[in-house]
Image 1: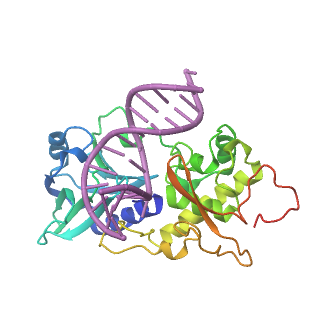
Image 2: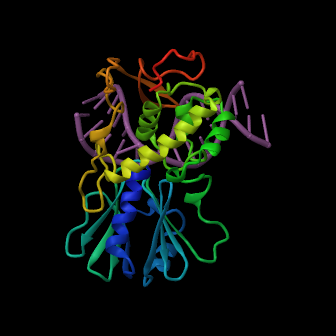
Length: 286
DNA sequence: GATAATGTTCGATC
DNA sequence: AGATCGAACATTAT
């Protein structure tokens, strides 16, 4: 269930094994995962070389030798695998691209929420999957964070999940980022002070960057291109730790779980304070 | 068998 | 018009 660090890991691994490879065959096993016409998808991919590998937020962007773009969004359970052509397809394979280098790239997705989209070079728009998403989380800018948070009234954690605010933060990293900022995730976004917004921007870059360094977080479904788990779960401070002790030195608080905008949210009731109502010098903000 | 799951989108409502 | 909320999507693992 990838967020930015998991998709960035896919991008890097895929670039390493598929740069300049040509697509010799396309198998669409489940038309539902193709955004648009499956026949046009197959026709447009066959014979093309994969020449560039990019990403914005949680969207993987593969550039083809004719200028078209292949976009991929894994949503909740989508995974990308690279297997030798001789091996059998994975259990939840939805689309397979056979390459001329002996590898097959497979979109494997249990829940079928993931999407692939082929955007022709001639297309006017940049694609459905890139619609409505803001700047990438690894280049999160403080002034930008200030103004976007200031005009929303939803809890700050819900604002961070909005892909128009920062593209790439998902449910795990949102809780982790706010823990590192010492901020209560329920704080209304507009109550976040400029200094705190700056800190959120900085921690967003830092935590997502660490996520990339550790090749993503594997709790249940996420796997890298070669089927291995990531390692960032070892660094999680609050996500999934309900009822356990806060890991911050000398805190002694307990991690609590609540639900915001329908998503599980974890925080330390002792060292994560709400922006408003915290007196200067009261302490507790890291 | 009920529950929850790393995400987005749509329709209804404020 | 714009923001926000809840349901929907679909399937598995616990």
